[in-house]
Length: 119
Image (cartoon, rainbow, N blue to C red; front, side, top):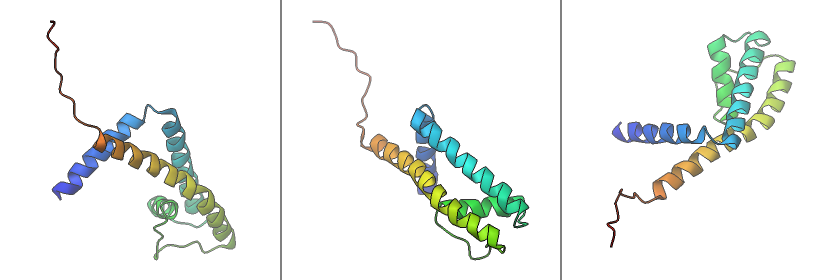
């Protein structure tokens, strides 16, 4: 549990550092738009609750999948095909940016603030 908390803390710290990066901002915006559009689609067309629609959207975009939820209409299945193809790339790019930054932060040596005395 302690390891999880420390990793989560490190990930959140990295996230807030990356939020200033323009490329990361674009990827984050696209990811949020993908999740919102998927949530709206699945809740209106497929009749999922908002929470179920968001859950299904996240599981699709992270390639986890869901055994309990699936689209029942042909239109929903076709939308899911295109949603998956476009969304996985966006989500994986966001996760890749986060993981690269976390790896770079871990490798960076800790530098103490030392004042150099004049000669």
